[in-house]
Image (cartoon, rainbow, N blue to C red; front, side):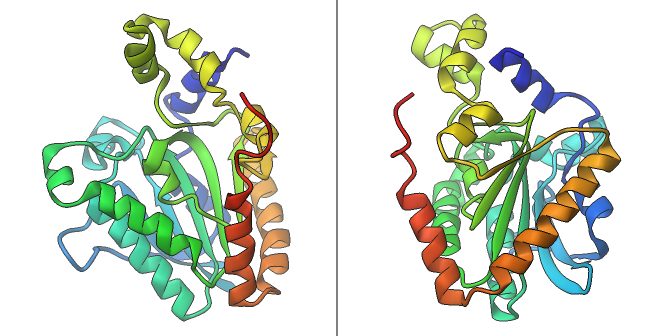
Length: 259
């Protein structure tokens, strides 16, 4: 597949969203709402769930499944209150020593005037900073689009996984083509240049694991098994060890060679 075909696959209608993964991997999900500052952003869902005999905090960027739900969830482009809600839930998880599992699928954070007025950049940077030092296990899984800081705000983790047809990039191919080549029709070339596929991300050490995309039930089963193994391994570490491992993971990014 060409890189642009991975982009189209990541955006495809009918692709599983965060709520699909949450409902098929976890049980007894209880959604929690609001950032306790401004509002409840439906582009980010989060709450408590059971994973086997363990209580976990699950957070996902949700695009919606049809036109009505996509509009309601702002097509997965979160406002600052969405990221603040996510951080509130992560800090709560740290307090009660619950692992955090994040599902990432966004073209990017919402860039409207209201979002900027309410501190979009600050909300994203605060998440990145706080997640780096969070003393509980964090696993982030890229399930579709991983767009720029809007994705990174939920992807500073001890382990980052990626579905094989997902993409992860600082900008969309169309945006890159418009800026670099002054022509959005050159998105195919931009996609190749951005090195945004799961194979590229694994090669550069940005992600730790690629999850094969089999039929849905098999993909859910694979993730359940991988989570079970990873959580056993990470929960054996102290809070300080988890934060140190996470810090070291991000310090070495960029030392895997040049594009």
